[in-house]
Image (tube, rainbow, N blue to C red; front, top):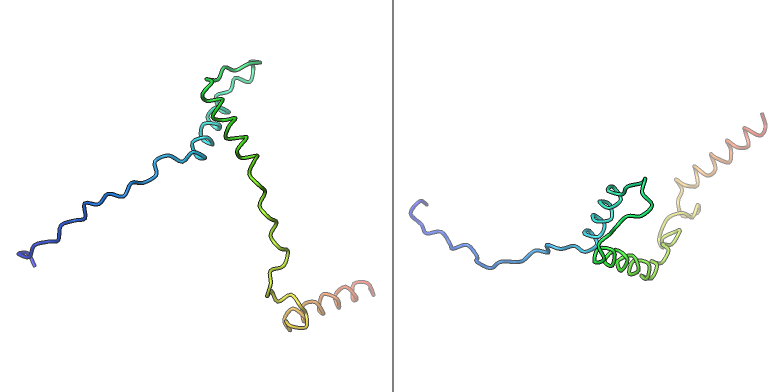
Length: 103
């Protein structure tokens, strides 16, 4: 094995994303919150920074809301008749309530 030539490594370079705009805006906003002078009425912010934060805020608020997930997914075994284990626990809870009412 020592004398066999090794295959040349692939020289293809796959670029990775180096900029995540949401992450950048979130980090910037958190840093600015930590740096705020709470005793001062005004805080100076560079115009480009303020523009980026406000644009990101407007874009985030302009996104359509996600649809609400269903309370019960199709195929879930919540029907007492189709789930004997559930039927037992429902019956047991009802019996426990009756026993508590009778005492």
